Image (cartoon, rainbow, N blue to C red; front, side):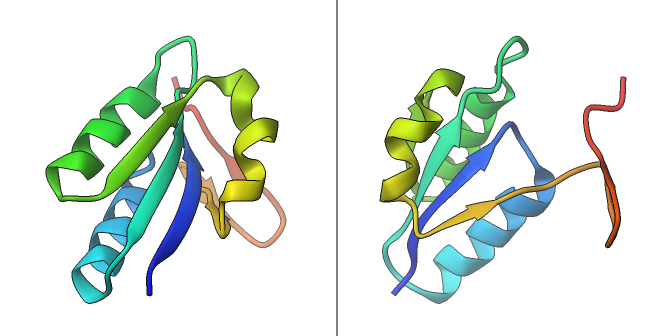
Length: 90
């Protein structure tokens, strides 16, 4: 069985991972943090919905209230290594 995964913003890695998981198993759900000010999470929730993944979109301040509903948290970044990460290259 899939599970419920919390993620922030719109990471292509998280998007693809959730899509692949949903193709392989049932009951994959997402809690997507809106990620202000650009609100990238809205796009991720929409994209996941197009692939049949039920998503709950929450505001940034709601993370603590929804954390106990997630089985895992997925994070992505522009660069991720064992000692650092880079996110939001502008």
